[in-house]
Image (cartoon, rainbow, N blue to C red):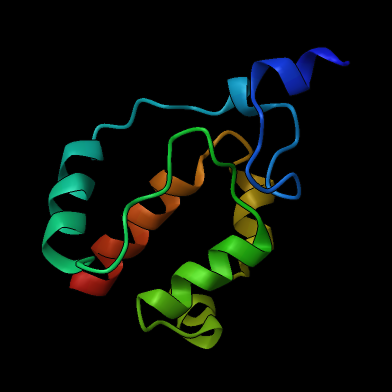
Length: 105
């Protein structure tokens, strides 16, 4: 049995790369994101800090926040894949927090 399966048994192995320990977990705005989530995400919980970004789960969250891929491209000037390439240590939770800030404004 390999060490990764003993360390972090993934719920969905497609989400996990074995590099979860490299994800950043301290963000200045994290408390603000928690407050925004409590206020606006009545049907969903924020993802765990250990969940990495992927195109599929980022698109799912855009849909949950009533944002389109076009909205995202217009605001950020790129795709979710571009974001992942420029911010490889960002967990999905931080990205969702950023999207909550965007949806609020």
